[in-house]
Image (cartoon, rainbow, N blue to C red; front, side, top):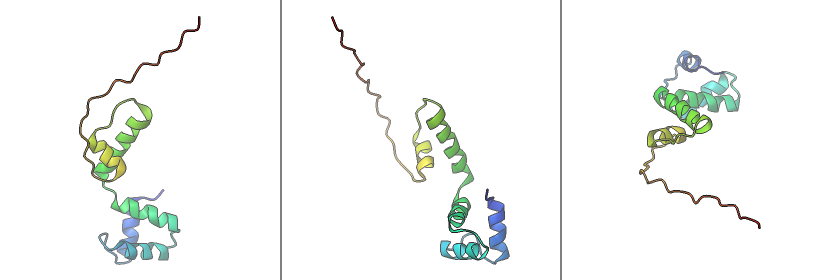
Length: 102
């Protein structure tokens, strides 16, 4: 698994700043024998914010392991974009009635 510190070190050794354009970072990583998919992953790791990463993990846990609802911040972290979610009253679903056969 790619580690952020390793990627940063490769860029520093090659004289590339972390805030450099994506094309420049991609070029350095490809010249360091990274595969195309690994380059995409490395760029995503570099651009990822540790705070949102933690929020994303917690949100994924809620989605897949509990019945809890996500708040707007958790939805934003999962999607990677800012979203505005208004609290709407939860509508009751009609109860499923089974027909009685006589």
